[in-house]
Image 1 (cartoon, rainbow, N blue to C red):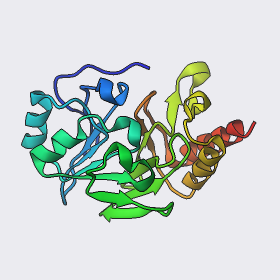
Image 2: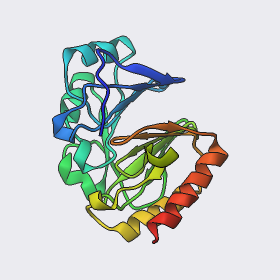
Image 3: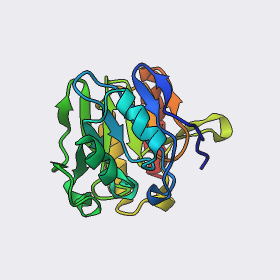
Image 4: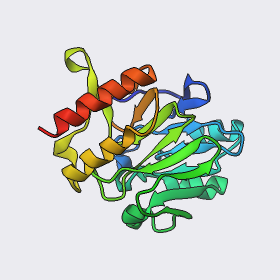
Amino acid sequence: MPTETLTAPRLIEDDVYFCAFNSAKSYGANSYFVRHPAGNWLIDSPRFVPALVESFQGMGGLRYIFLTHRDDVGDAGLFAKRFGAERIIHEADQSASPGAEIIVRGRDPMALAAEVTIIPVPGHTEGHCVLLYKNKFLFTGDHLAWDPADGGALEAYRDYCWFDWKEQIRSMERLRDHRFEWVLPGHGRRINLPADAMQVELTRLIDKMKI
């Protein structure tokens, strides 16, 4: 899947940035940066390179590093050490980041900061989670992406479901309890749609997944 090459994080919208510097340790997954008044967030890990370290420092450092799942840990430990940030991962995927400071448990949504909710979505891996920011931006890891083929649609990839497809369907159904306008994936295309249209697309995907 295509990635973008930049020399510094690029603004997507509001206070959300695409990091670039995708890491082979994370299978080339995208990562994102959020400027938050209570401390900045890194979502999944890019490569630990001076250009990013300097950019993050200039924007106020990092307080939290949210790891959607075990595949995309990358250089999170190096960023955590450099900035004194706390890593967050679900207990079921904790073995990929055994030093993580905050552990998500169970399947209930977890609020960690103003307008930040972590939602467990087991399926791709047992401990996969997504992060919802401002009821607008959904950072989806490998759970959900936009496929531009045939006019475009939300997509989940059964061939890359390492844990349980039926669980991933149930996780997708639970996402309908939440409103969002952006899907920001680790792999695949990002998409911005009105919240109502996103709900329609999500329902279409769930129906497709059940076939």
